[in-house]
Length: 306
Ligand SMILES: Cc1ncc(C[n+]2csc(CCOP(=O)(O)OP(=O)(O)O)c2C)c(N)n1
View 1 (cartoon, rainbow, N blue to C red):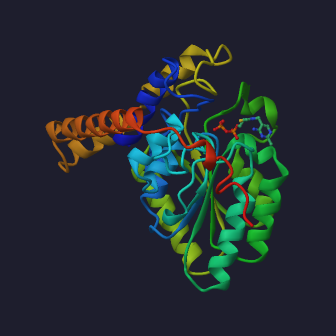
View 2 (cartoon, helix red, strand yellow; view 1 turned 180 degrees about the vertical axis):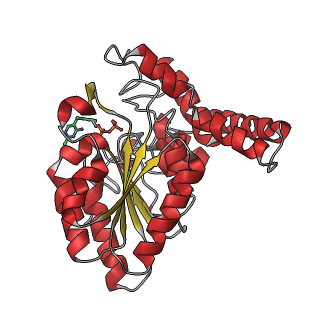
């Protein structure tokens, strides 16, 4: 969580200063979802994510240098600089990609779950998506298919209350995503997405169901994004009292408090974790700055499969 916080705080600054090109969506404030879900997965489990996927990709084990270089568009990036923030992938770690098309990760992960089942691999496949994507047909088609074929798929809905500039309550009469999915006969849990231990435990239960052949699970993880839909969005559509209430429930502070109260860590040890994360991001940023741009003759490599 500290690494994701440090990475995205830095990315936000680098984007503002014009060092990172393109379009960037951060998940600041949502770190407990990424760490809680991915921390309960095996390295060979599959994961697909969205336009807001930096945290999920880092938590699934992507190399930090490769990730930062990818956002800079450098040749040393995880996708040689061709994917960027919204299309980064790392298949060797089961990361089937971020995706700018809302709802597109769910059919992909359904295929991954089907392959795992047919090959008897016991791999679980997780799709991250926002509550806005529940209004896309892909969600309903993928969920139903996973249900009737008992596929080992976790639908991890990061419910941050907003899709672009629209509040969830304005988009549907049934605000509960878990409530909407009950009609498909799929087990669903709604969890405090800012409590990393609760997210981890719920994912452990979902993984257990998937690996034992009981079919898909929906996890509705209630959280909040601190920044705008994209970096630069001033968020005039969010009530300040609501935003403050969620900032007071900073998932890192909640986790640190729980660790200190239980005696698992001291405040000094936790400060050292944050400092180490900052230093790691300093190094990744400097390496990305120094890295070469992709060669022009590489423009079409890896773009089409022959
Ligand atoms: C198919 C499609 N429709 C619309 C868009 C434009 N768009 C980009 S992000 C977004 C909202 C997504 O909201 P949500 O799924 O809740 O994810 P969040 O941004 O909250 O993480 C929309 C409508 C798109 N990229 N793809």
